[in-house]
Length: 362
Ligand SMILES: [Ca+2]
Image (cartoon, rainbow, N blue to C red; front, side, top):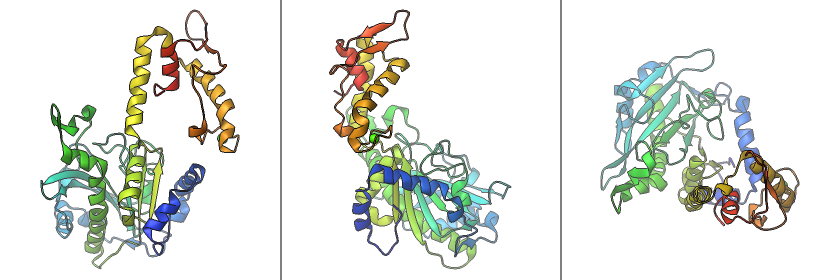
């Protein structure tokens, strides 16, 4: 999905979204495994900061931030890595080159003064590129979108430090609320939606950051290298909730990026909510509705036998789920429960059980 800047973003997006899932996954795999191709040391035009430690001091970073179009405060934040004064320089080790991390807040809505927090990572050797990382779940934290210490090594994060080794300047945001706490941040009180917070979460924090982060990157490196800098390419990448962020980015402001990677997008929130609620409710309503692991394995075999081929390739992957007409209550499968003291041959007659096996959404 990476493209040359000469093509228009919108036409790229239209083409990218038509790619089949296996090609997108192959692209992600290549992105993650092409370490040598992306190595900052080997990248033509890589910029080296002569004194990153000095450039990373809070007053120096705040001076760079003062040049940006949106109001930015460099400071320690409550829901990210604790950086005293909002910055931290980490010297080079055997594993990682030196890098500077910065936290703070930026204004997402000038009319109300609403802010969101950000985390920026500036490697000492910059490859000239900007990478914005999506968040996870309902966001409000920086566990997977911290370039130095991602807790999940999937999609955009790579292994810990990989983004720094490759030389990307990277940014992420908490999407305008600190912590999740069962999404209480989305309401002001009973029946009162916090529209400012919801807008930040759905798209605005990432949209403002897309512009701000690139400005911040060139301001930081321009000041640190003492010559004007520009960004060669800008990418967005995220998985799960971050995959949703990637889809939102591609839908609402694709012109901000040269490439967008969205993995396992948590984009249909209502369906996920109903699925979870339905599954939970079904298992509460009937003891017979329990879905033990052994039964899941059995269902998996049945569904694959029925639906794997429907995408044109029998490869163990169901990549056209819309064509897969499966219901635990329909058809011939007898689902055998094997976890209890008495193995039960389930005939698919218990509605709650069917509901639970189906994921609660039928
Ligand atoms: Ca298949």
